[in-house]
Each structure stands twice: as C-alpha cells, then as structure tokens.
Image 1: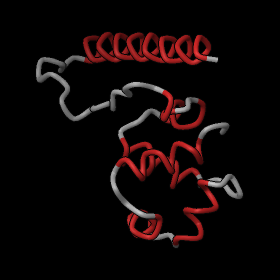
Image 2: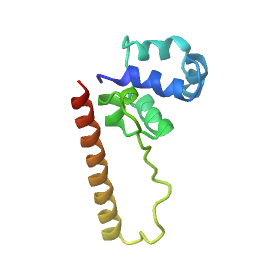
Image 3: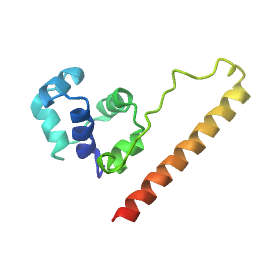
Image 4: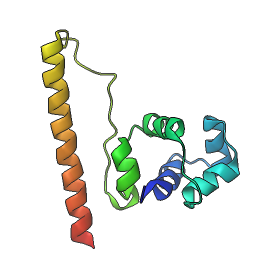
Length: 117
C-alpha cells in the first residue's frame, strides 16, 4: 500500500473536501482520515471498497500508483455496459477485453513513472 495514503489525500483535495468533510462520507472522524493519509493506519477492506467506488479508481491503482504524478487517471464505469451484452459468453468476452485494456493502461502508467524517476 505504498501510495494509498498519498492517493487518498490527492483525490480528497481534488474533490475540494477537507478531512472532516470527507470523513463524514465514510462515517469516520477527521483523525482517522489524517492517519490514513499519513500512513499511521490503513483503511479496512470495507473502507477500501468505498474509496474504490467513490473515486471510480481501480483498487490496484489506489494502492500502488502515485496518482498525483499521473497526468490523467480514467475512472472505471460499469454502469454504462452496452445493452447488447446479454449472453454470458458475450459478457465474458466483453469483460476480458476490459481487463486487457485496464492492464495496458496500468502498464503505460508504470512505464511513465519509471521513466520519470
């Protein structure tokens, strides 16, 4: 969870919220949010899932990528799946293609990070 605290802070500030305001969304106090951001404690699995869904950022990106150093992170959106996806084999093919695209995006982000170091 190398970048989790830094990413929580980055994304929270990008939304224009202070720690207290953001904590209310999670039913957590300002101190808890500060501890997460400073690496004192880490959020539990429920909170991590909330963060993933709230920000629309894949969990692996939240944990292992410095989002502040990336020019653009595309949020995932599973709500706009095409209506034509009805049969299971078509759904699986669609999901596998989405996974392939996400892996490409992650590889691109990682290579940019390695190039900037």
